[in-house]
Length: 232
Ligand code: BV8
Image 1: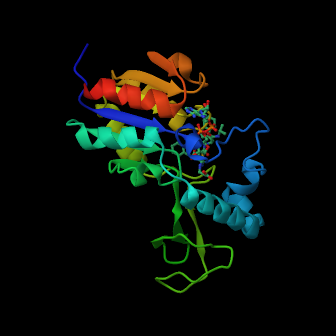
Image 2 (image 1 turned 135 degrees about the horizontal axis):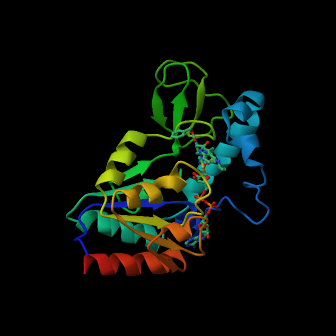
Image 3 (image 1 turned 135 degrees about the vertical axis):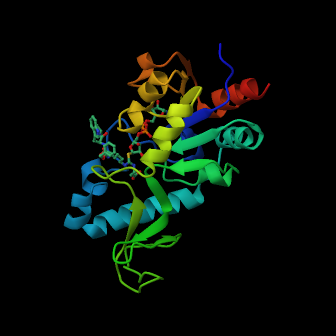
């Protein structure tokens, strides 16, 4: 088996579930009691900006109140100690990877603690609310929206992600259902470039059959065990 030097890790809502942040595919399919298309599309924002701003103000509060769990801490340790290339590509808008100490992190779907001015294109670290249409700190316009990639919008840094997938020897997917693209297609891309592929999840995902190996269990248990193994 070729030596593992370059690792790409994809994380989803499941890695933050044990930190108290709800996952998406709740049994009722609602997203915190909203239909996804009512709160996470550009169309929804044009139709009812207050509903969308209130929804993300709530998500921002929840993120600020949450704490990293042992899965986040284990990946932060791997980031510190792994001598080869490593990129943690997260679909999550929370900052729990960074608060656990991880640095090589990329938020492909944006960040809850960031506001984006649609007038001057500036982005601002944001912990307050947006429902009250605060002025942009750079240009003063009341044109701030959540810095989030909504459905139908292009995810962030796709070139950097594709480049890392092309160089990966190992692709690991943690806490994601494989329901949303282009993230759900990364396993095929990595495998296509010859990488070994491993899934760590509570239950088999929609893409499980595409992985060389699947380990089931809560992230707070199976992620530290896997990191221990890799760093041994
Ligand atoms: C785009 C930010 C053009 C918002 C999000 C191809 C086929 C079909 C459809 C499409 C396609 N290509 C594009 C589409 C359309 C769409 C899409 O995929 N629709 C789906 C619904 C079919 N995709 C898009 O619109 C994307 N944009 O395509 O632009 C383009 C094309 C190519 C290249 C460039 C551009 C944009 C999608 C991004 C939307 N924004 N988030 C916000 O957060 O508010 S997506 C959002 O939903 C999350 O970020 C995440 O990506 C997804 C939720 O999935 P998961 O994170 O996996 O969470 P989920 O709840 O589903 O699953 C949790 C898992 O964890 C479960 O498996 C569970 O078992 C496990 N688990 C639970 N607890 C634990 C656990 N595991 C371990 N331990 C535990 N304790």
